[in-house]
Image (cartoon, rainbow, N blue to C red; front, side, top):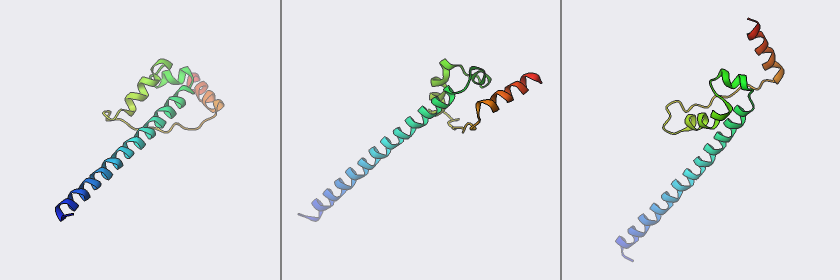
Length: 100
C-alpha cells in the first residue's frame, strides 16, 4: 500500500467512526427526551383538575404543552421540578387560598 492509499483508508475509517458516534449520541438524546416527556406527562397528569387550571392547562392539553416545552425550537425549554407534596398539603393550601 502506498502512503496515499493508507491515508485514504485511515481517513475513511475515522469518518465512519465519527458518524457512528454521532448516531449513537443522537439515539441517546432521543431516549433522554422520551424519558423527560413521559415523566413530565406523568407528573402533570397526577395533578388535580383545579391545579392544572391554575397553571393554564387541562387534561386534554398536557401532551401538547409538554411537547411544546421540550421542542428544540422552543426558547423556553426548561423543565421545572415539581415539589413533592402530599395530597393533604396541597388540599390545605387550596383551602387557605379559597378562604382568603
